[in-house]
Structures are given as C-alpha cells and as structure tokens.
Length: 484
Image (cartoon, rainbow, N blue to C red):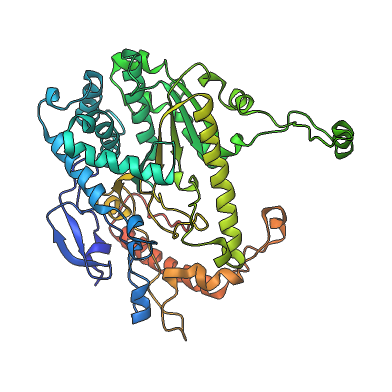
C-alpha cells in the first residue's frame, strides 16, 4: 500500500495559514503521522525513499545544514522562525490602526488578505513573503529590542557578505509564484512613494534583474501597461490605487547587460597606432554612467532605486577568505565554479554600479534556492545569511501549491549497493554528451545511458498505473507526464 504522504500529501489550503504538517523521521523522510501545527523552517528533502537502504544511503539524506562551512553560516532557523513568529502575531491583530504601517500599506494588506478575487487569488505564502518585507521595513524599527534583533542580524549579514549593500532574501519554493510577490512588492512601494514623496522608505523606481531571456520575458506582466499585467488580471491593487501605480518606472533586464561595452570598434593595429610610442592604452569601454543610460534611462531621474533579483542565487560576492578554494576543485567542478563566479561577479558589480550612479534603497532577492554556489568561497549550499523568510518545497507540497516530485522507486539497478535514482546525475554524468550548444545538431536524442533509460521506464510505469486509475475513476482530464 502506498505511503499516505505520497498518496495524499496535501494537508492545508493554499490560501490559509498552514495548520498541519507531516512528521519527518530522523532521516528527513515523512512518517505516517501528522502534527496539528505549522512546520518550522528547516532543511528537508520531500522525495520518496528508495527501496533499498544502507548506512551509506542514509548519509545522502542528511539535510543541508550538515554541509555548511561553519556555525556562522548554518541555516539560521532561529532568525527565520523568529521573524515568522513576530509576523504571525502582527498579522493576528484585528485593528489595522495597531499594525504600525501606513494607511496605504494597511489598505493593500486588507485587499490581499480579504478581497473577493474573481480569478486567481494570492496564495498565503505569497502574501506572507510580502508581509515579511513590510514588517521589516515599517514595523520592526518601532518594535524596540524585539524588532532591532532581526534588523541587526540583517545588517550584520550584509556587512559581512555584501558590504555597502542592504539585501533581503525571501525564499519561496519553485512554482509558488515569485512573480506575483514581485508585483505586490512593487505595488506596496509605489503607492506609498507616490503618496509619501518625502519618505526614504519607498520608491517608484524598480530595476528587475533576471539571469536569462526567458525569465526576462516572463516578467513583462509586472509592467502596469502590459496587456497581461498582473495588477489588472489578478486584481492585486484596489481600483483607486491604479493611477498611483502608473507612476512607477520599471526596468527589466538581464545581468549580462551590466557588462561594459566597447564604444567603438577598433582593430588591434589601429589600437597600437593610436597608443603611439608611449604605449598609453586608449579607453574605448563605456563608462558606468553610459551603461546606466543604455540599460535603464528611465530610472536616471529617480533616487533610491529598489532592485529585485529573480533567481538571486546567481548573485553574490565571493568570500574574501574562502572556506572552499577553487584550487580544491578539479575538472568539471572547477569549470562550473569558474562560470558561477564570472556570472556572479558581473551581476553584483552591475548592482554596485547602479548604487554608485543612482543610489539604492534595498535589494530584494527572490529564489527557491538562495544558497551560495560552488566557487563562491562558501561551502556549496550555504543559505544566504540575509534570507529572512522561507516557504520550502515541503511547505508548498503540504499546501497544494506545487506537485509532489516523483523519483523512480520501482526497481534497483542490479549490482549496486545503493539505488542510484536519487542522485542520478552522479552516476550518468560522465556518460552524457559533453558537446556545446553550437554542435548539438550532431547529438542523438535516443543515445542515452542505460541507467537513465531504466529510470525513465520506472517513472513511466508509475504513470501508466496512475493513468489507468484515473480512467477507471472517469476523471475528465488525464494525468500529465513531465520529465525535467
């Protein structure tokens, strides 16, 4: 009989405060017991256990807190759970006049929490992420020692890891709707900035930075005048605030745009000629100001820009005194680390250019995995210490926000002590094609490793069983089989 968790994992409404969670065993695996409380923030891996167990296999299930570099960089659950508890108390206050926020913020909070949406309604986790940013900005500074403790942690974390920048990371499971959170953050900041122009807490200028073209295009719904704007299609603001929102300036770009470009094409021979006998190098790169003019001209008249990083785990400063050095890495691991560092350096340096030229109020990082990458100098998997909220994949599964990941558990590969399906890449990576995208035409899509074929067969076998079960139950829509 299938484990109750994998048969019916959903315990909570996606729109209400979570009131129950599956109890996990010492290996981070779900038991059959349900606890009548919300799950506390911590590292967990909600995927099925393989059929065959051993000591070595159990080690693979240790949560990520065992893999960080030192006590200072552990998953700071006390801080995250502490902020969550304070936000819970604040949220429960019935009288908006006791919330300690501006009337505009109070209107938005009431709208997100209680409006009768005709279509898509914000999930609880989306509202909670924005509530956390609001609480830290408007409420915590006036809460004495209680609020100051969390603000001090945030400041100290940034002083150490991002000197001169104030970053706030909101961790939200993949599929939980980061784009909606961005829209709500923009609405909160813009409405307050328009109606309180002298306040430095708010801005109507936003720089949204994404790692790729696909994500950049997806973020167009954050533009108030876009045909599919979330503010209109998802009713994210009261009608009387629409005019205020139109006064915001939003630039959506890729971090690649921060790279300073050549202002003129100069051949090597011409460059040598222009340098002359003295050999003084000629500077043909654009200046920081010219980059700002090229990438974000509409923000140039504004101050205190708010940067929102999507997939923010690609943006970090390298640790000055690395716990893990590049010299400790070999082969593909080292190459991956170098690529991570190059991308992160370009991204964070671009943000610093914006800070120098325009001024920043804050950087808000959104990611399902706000962890330092390999090559950062931190132990791979270390949580960004400026992360102040966490709605994990397990939370999202229990609330019905995302689907349960499936791992093939039907069979073990003969001759192996530990089932390989939980860590498939480690076992097939060397057998996969190494060619780059420019030569991908010569790759054979059917020439895949035997272990990968076995895993796909096991997964599809489970799908066939599920398909038949749904058909017997005469469900109107068949299940969909997607492999990522």
